[in-house]
Length: 77
Image (cartoon, rainbow, N blue to C red; front, top):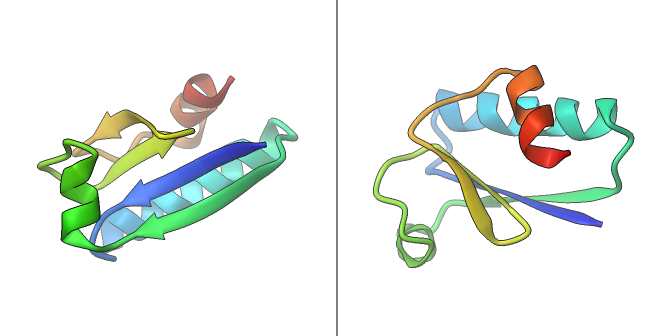
């Protein structure tokens, strides 16, 4: 099971990243959980200084941008 974490304060870009991550996971048929991390201290604990960011199984894959669904699929495969 993949653990997807969207790191951000809940801005429109953060919400779009969450949507794209879910769409990519579903398209790949993955079992996953998605968590929205909004606490700034938790975000900083990942070493992230710019949001939104996406972590997969605790590893930060994207920072400061919103990749499209196809790009996220590549990160999850």
